[in-house]
Length: 287
Ligand SMILES: NC(=O)c1ccc[n+]([C@@H]2O[C@H](COP(=O)([O-])OP(=O)(O)OC[C@H]3O[C@@H](n4cnc5c(N)ncnc54)[C@H](O)[C@@H]3O)[C@@H](O)[C@H]2O)c1
Image (cartoon, rainbow, N blue to C red):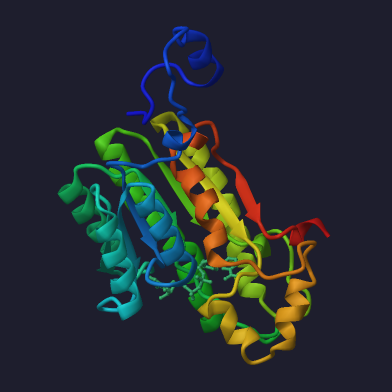
């Protein structure tokens, strides 16, 4: 059910009785009370930041990730969410997204417990560097297995629950600007290929699932400092300047700069948006 009852926007303004004091609805349209969300790769980095944003918007969020138990950082964020109250929660579930059966089962358990499934963010991903002519089959396969297969299995797991409960839903696949452009001077053929696959996966899923009111979009961040990118920047500090100067804003992004866009995509504020790729790159792709 929609978060705002009755007419909305201009229609609401025109139906509002003169002499009454109306309340704005715009922030309510972004809110997620009573919604249930899963976020793969939600243990840290962009996944954790987006999981927190959804929880702040009111959702009960389940972070799916590899470690058998959550880190102190995750536990502290989860306690913060608990203190925010009003039904919000951030829980941890250990899952390997490359294991289709496991992801389907764990997400089905969440669906059975909650009685609904509204939002899926597939953010688990890995990055591996090797020259394109020497890229070993096993390394290539590992990147594909997490970044492509794992994203599909996560979307399937959530989509199956969304169909079961019949409330529609929003699936957000975390791609990258590397799915549309090639990062200059980096030997990331597997990663770039995997992210292009995610863009097309989002469009394909969107077309198949639209009739069930399940929206599917991809979100493509630019360079943001996380443990994934720290593995490069911390070893070669000049890279941070190089990446920063590759976009018109002249800086790296912060994980929290995805809070707005993920909440928009997850919520009723984006009900006509599906099959789209939203690029949040500081304008990197514009140059
Ligand atoms: N940081 C950036 O600049 C950037 C830019 C564009 C896209 N992205 C994408 O955003 C997503 C998150 O990246 P990040 O920077 O936060 O990286 P990160 O390495 O900090 O987080 C990735 C998370 O995915 C989890 N993960 C990896 N393999 C998994 C598996 N098999 N099953 C379950 N979880 C698994 C990791 O444990 C980790 O918690 C990735 O898909 C990445 O490709 C990141």
